[in-house]
Amino acid sequence: MFDHGGTGPAGELLIRAVTRIDELPSALGEDLLAELGDRRPALFLDFDGTLCPIVPHPDQAVLDNETRQALRRIADRCPVAVVSGRDRLDVAGRVALDDLYYAGSHGCDISGPGGFSQQWGAELRPSLHDAGDELDQALEGIPGAWVERKRFALAVHYRQAPADAEARIEQAVRSVAARHPDLRVAGGKKIFELRPDIDWDKGKAVMWLLESMGLRTDGIVPIYLGDDETDEDVFRRFEDGSGIGIVVGAGDRLTAARYRLADPAEVSAFLLRLAKVPRYST
Ligand SMILES: [Mg+2]
Image 1 (spheres, rainbow, N blue to C red):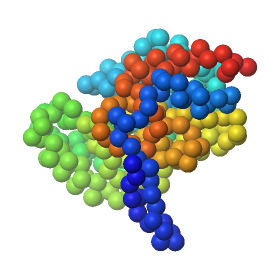
Image 2: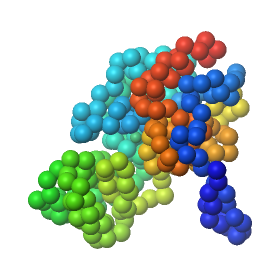
Image 3: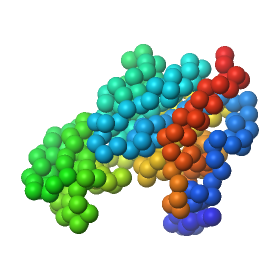
Image 4: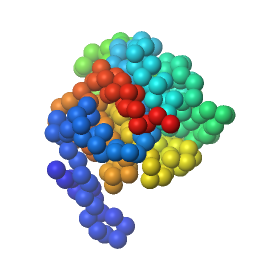
């Protein structure tokens, strides 16, 4: 299925390939390994909803040990990066594996083995600080809505708020955002976020990592796994066949990914399978 993606700089019609998740082949089938062939994967993974089930409070997310061991085995032979909306140190602490690359804050804060490090948008942290105080005030008295102060973002969580409060919460977020034109509003699963309004997203972060890690070669195929809207920025980068997008979830949401896995349990099964492929050993 195709979607009109607007017009390009020369006025030409841009056609984006998008498919309903349920129509995609499973990444657990034979097609994906056949597509990889003799090439080595470079694995990029989102964390919440991908490696870990979504939990009522972000502090409760725990990576199960079987998944961690599969990641460790893959990382022995292939580059592995975790790309998350969480703070980099938060997600790195939960994955708890050295020698991985970690891109926190939707790719604004990257680290890797050997002191590899890069940040984008750090100059807007004072504005985030002020907006955090304003949001605390604006959300006072709405049960179940709370502000998480992250290094490069503010997250307003409302999973536990009454459904009829959502419009008020969105209004509060948008009015604070209007006072801070250097920040922008983004949404996720029962989350609003205020982030530095810079031209950067997970897609750009993954492309930057591929370049910086020296992985843009014929023998490497980047694979990205993610469950949310912010992950579509990566899937779209791979639509030209330069990588493989795997969406985690089910249903009729449109996605630019080419394979699917139902949930983090299937992600774990996929990783275990990849860890056992002998041809990726050196
Ligand atoms: Mg996610």
